[in-house]
Image (tube, rainbow, N blue to C red; front, side, top):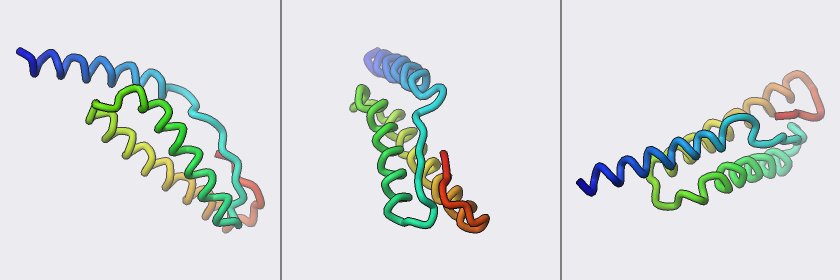
Length: 94
């Protein structure tokens, strides 16, 4: 039952990974009017996700969740920047 053992290990790692993600990853500050500042915030967020997933390089579930998280957070940053530009705010906190 090697496959079952592997699945059990993957699920155990997934549980640890999600526990590590519970709460705040960090705080991002960026200028919504500056594309470079927005991109820097995105890169920083992606590095936070990568740092937490680095301990599980062979877990495909964690790789998939990490990619989805980065995509979701990236879009949230872009949306926040767009919203701030529409309001005329000069700094956005995420």
